[in-house]
Structure formats: C-alpha cells, structure tokens
Length: 531
Image (cartoon, rainbow, N blue to C red; front, side):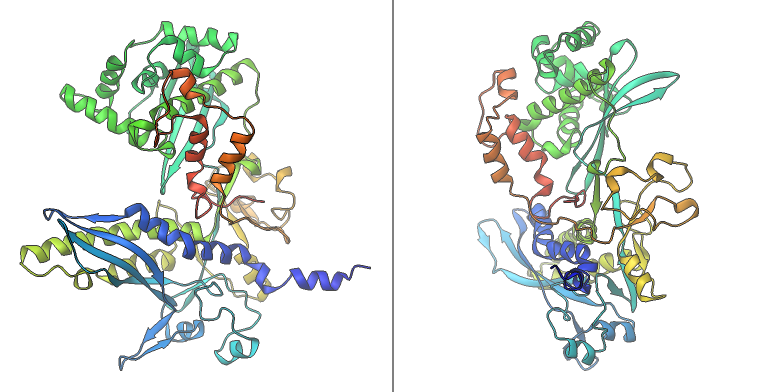
C-alpha cells in the first residue's frame, strides 16, 4: 500500500517549492552568460587593426572585501545585516589583438553578478542543516530570490505570447472584418512584430519595424528573390481557392522584377535619398528587421519568403473557413520568462554597455600613447551598476516595471506564494475579459483560486501546487535527424529551383532549426514552456 506521507514529503520540500527559479538561474550561469559573450565575440575599436577577442566567462563565489583589504566569503545574512548586495565576481578571458600580434590572454574581473540564494553559485548550496544555522540562515528557507542593498528581491515570472509562432485572427478595422497573421520574431533579445493582413479586395499587405505603413506582399516577396508569378503562388498554396485570391493580388502588383521591388522598398525606407542609398538601406532593413529569428544574412531570404508565404496562407485559410482563429489564451501559445531568462536579457544589455566603455577606454589610452592593457581599461563598476540597479528598482530592460519586487515576508506562506507568482504584461486599466478568465488549459498549471481582487484579477496568478516547468536544453541535432527519418524534404529549393549551398538555410528543415535557435543552450529567450 502506497504511503501518502512518504510521497508528500518527497515532493513538498523546500527544493521543489522554487525549483523553477533555481533551475532557470543555474541554466543562466551554465549557458546564458557564455551565450551572450559568444554573441559579442569581439570588441571592435577605431584603432587600426586592433580589437579585443573575448573568451570564457567564469563566475566566482560571493565574497566581500573588508576595510583592511581582506576578502572573506559572503553569506546572505551578512548582506541583509550590512545592507550590501549578495553578489559574485565575473571573470572574463580577454585578448588584445593588434594586426598579427596577440597579447597574452588575461582574465579580468568585469563586474559583480547578483547571486540567487540556493543556486549553484550560492555559498549556501550543498551545506548541512547545522551549517545553515551557524551562518544565520533558516534551513527551511527555499531561496530563489536575491539580496540587493540589504533587501530581499524576487523576480516575477512573466507570462507572454510565444515568440516565433504564427497567430491568425480576425480584426475589425473601419467597420470591415479582416484576416491578420502575426508573429513576434525574437532574436538575441530583439523582438519584432511582423503582421500580414488580407484587407479589401483580398489584397495582402505586410508591416514590420523600420518601415512606415504597410507594404504589398507581392512587392516584398519579389524583393527577396521570388520573381515569377508561378513561384510566388506555389510558395503560398496549391489550393485552387487560395490560388484565386493570389491571382487577384498578382493583378494588382506594383512591381514585376526583383530590381523594381528593391527600388520600391528603398523608396519607402529612405524616401528622398539617392537611388544607391535607397537600395542599400532596403537590403539592410530586409535582412535585419524582417523576421530576424530566421537569420540576418542575404542567404536567409528564401526561408523568410517561405515563412511570409505561410503567414499569407493562414490569412486565406481563415477567410475560407478552413481554420479557426488562434486562441491567444491557450497555454500552448504562452511562454514564461523565468529568472534566468530575465537575467540573460539584463546581462546582454549591460554587457553591451561595458563593451562600449572598454572600446572608449582603449581608444583614449592609445591617443595618450599608453600601453594597451585589459586590466586597466575594464571598469567593473559599469557592469555592476547596470546589473544591480534594475534588481533594486524593478525597472527592467525593455521598459517593463515591477519585474523585481520586495519579497513578501508577512508569513512563510506569503513568501512561498510570492515566489510562485506569474504576472501578465496586459494593461490593468483595460477589461481584457478573455485574458482574465480561467482557461481549461490552465488545469494543473495555474491555481484557479489564488488571484487578487480588483484590477489585477486574472492578470496576476500563481502556479498550481504540483506544477513543474521545463528548463532543459533541447537537442536540435536530434530533432533534425528525426525529421529526416520521417521523410521531411526540402521545400524552398524545389520551388525556387535553387541548389542547396553549405551554410545557407535554403531548406525547410534548416528553417525550422534556425527558428528553434533561441531554444538552444538556454532553452528559449521567450521563456520556458510547460512540460
């Protein structure tokens, strides 16, 4: 006979209460930090043939420097009593390269990283019950929060729509009901909303950042190298009813060649400039701002064209009644940003600021004919301040407020509740009835009763008692092999008659792999999904 007491004790322990926060932050320490460094890779300078190459990043143990210069291990209770931040030093390998000459690789302290209690970098990790009491900690305290300037701060779990996923829906505009397909394309912390809509006369238009208004779908497809009418139609669909809609769009086409399409895009993104600049700007905007999660190089344009064609097909299927509008409140369409994801976003922005400061310090040292030395040009306070300030105030990168909150210590249950809270980005001033309602897919994931009264009702939620959140790394190579085994064949190459080149994303399979890039190493930048 099953002993329920043994089972409950095995699960309801302090390790499982805030496991989602601790796993996510550990994932950030293991993968997220190095991922941001690898994205930067080098720090370019205006000094001729001189740059800084970045290497491995390492996190030390939380320490405090005393008045007499001695360095001691720092424990959380010391941070509370002395009103200091419980943080650990960050060490980064940096090499100054000047022409063919490389200076010796130096490991410099680049700043202090606020450390989550009970994470793998915390001094409390893996110590015994008695040792916890000795250093002034409650052995039953679950951790999962930070200590900044002596105050306990917890990062709220943010709920948002899944990035890099097509959502088809109806919108009412000027009395007309139109079909719209949206995707929040996210890459390295940058989020771009791309919208494909079927308006009056079945004309399909596209809007995305860096371009004012809407651009014809046909014009944009031709600007990405899909020139002939047949190629465009075949990319969208082989359904006769959809082809009829596409023929209407082709009849209204503004341009008929790739060159004309690039000129049209250029005239929209750089009006009044020279033709050469307009073409250059059009290429830059298409590569950088249109569906950035699929890549930022000209070789990625065939996949972007295929993705846009899918979005257009979603609009046509919605108009024909072949599919239903996507339910944005369904939990498969949501993602959660946990502590590790939020810290990765913050570290990316903070490190970019540090890189600019290092560049400035190197150039200033060169102008004064000083030896270029990594140790002397790195100002650790730059990164430290930009990591601690958002945690102390709650004002996060991306303009979000209230991300970091003062941990509720009214009683033990209040603290546990606060650590398991989920907040929505929707405005509290608007009704948002559907978003506030209890959705069937929240069963077993979100508590149906623990939500505040008043304007926050349904927008501030709490995890269900036995929920678990996946934070493991996805095996993309294994996924790719599985899809090969299932018979997935190249699509874009067949349509365009292209030869697949090494290093490009000219196949449908590689498009899927690239779209899943944000899940590699640190799961996903849009947040962790439920298992």
